[in-house]
Image 1 (tube, rainbow, N blue to C red):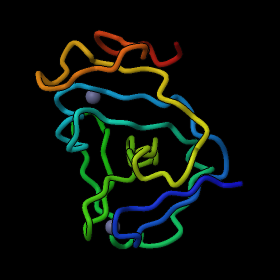
Image 2 (image 1 turned 30 degrees about the horizontal axis):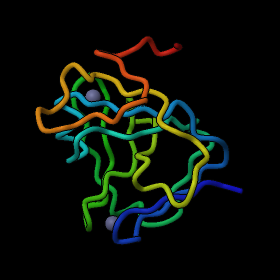
Image 3 (image 1 turned 60 degrees about the vertical axis):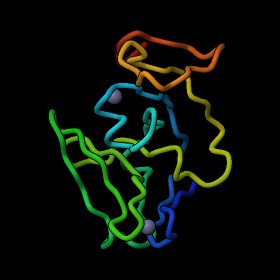
Image 4 (image 1 turned 90 degrees about the vertical axis):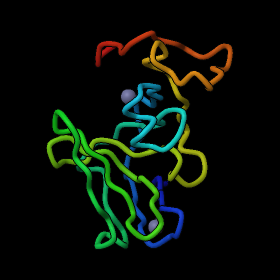
Length: 134
Ligand SMILES: [Zn+2]
Ligand SMILES: [Zn+2]
C-alpha cells in the first residue's frame, strides 16, 4: 500500500510508491528555524517513487544554502518535503499519514541542540552529522 501524506489544511497531498528510508532528526539551529520545532524529522524518498496528488499549486519552495530547500503549503504553512537541487529529496515525517513503518534511526547535530530541548534517552545520538552511507 502506498504511503500518503498531507499538509495541515489538507489541500496538498502526496503519495510514495515505495519505502521511506533513513529517517533522521537534525537538531541544528538551521533545521530548528526551517521546521519551526526542536528539530527536523525527515525521511528520504526515491524521486521517481514520489508523486503530488493535489494542491501542487499551493506549494512554495524556499531554497537555502547548498541547494537544499523545503517545500511548504502557503495556505497552512506545513512543511511537506525537502528538495535538493530542485529534485524531491525527502518528506517531513510530521505530514505523513498513519504508520510509514520506519523509525528515526539517528538524531544528528545534538551538539548544537536548543538549550530548552531535553533529548529522550535510548535514541541514537550524534554530536554532529554522520557520513551519508553509515
Ligand atoms: Zn495546507
Ligand atoms: Zn540540521
